[in-house]
Image (tube, rainbow, N blue to C red; front, side, top):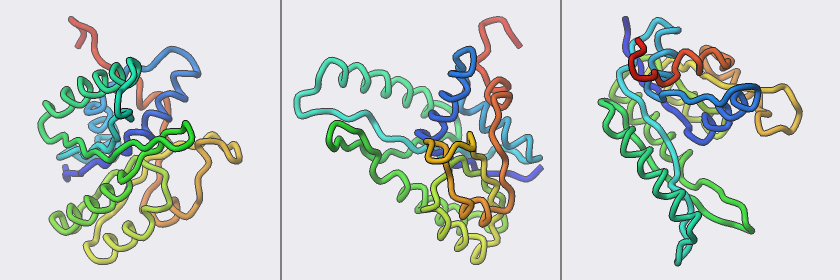
Length: 195
């Protein structure tokens, strides 16, 4: 079984998981197990996971809510960093007009796609994202390093929704797989005593 590296846009995956949670029971899934599940679906072995996030925004004097969010995020990050071959890459969170925006995350994904492609020529990568900003780097690593890209994505087929996406990224990837609730259910945390 060939190895793969899984690249996860954390904010995007959180939106997709939230959509499926809103359609029924709240999903509590294991990120590492999700990476393993998706890799196995493609006949691949999960060698490494690169997870991209931005810590919650903190004011100069953090509010109670900001402090609580940061504490929860730090616990979540610490758990992920204990998983062998699981790397958390962080951008930053910026507040503009009372809205929060991630900054630097797409750049980190692009940098890592390029460096991992150079080190793993001819490999297959799994990308969980939807941003057309990745199209140029996907083209580059396919041409220069023979990388095959499998895109996992979600769309609700509603124009201008948060899941609207351009066909541009779909056409540049070697394979595109629509994410389903079942993928998350197969990757749920197991309760004590369950196998």
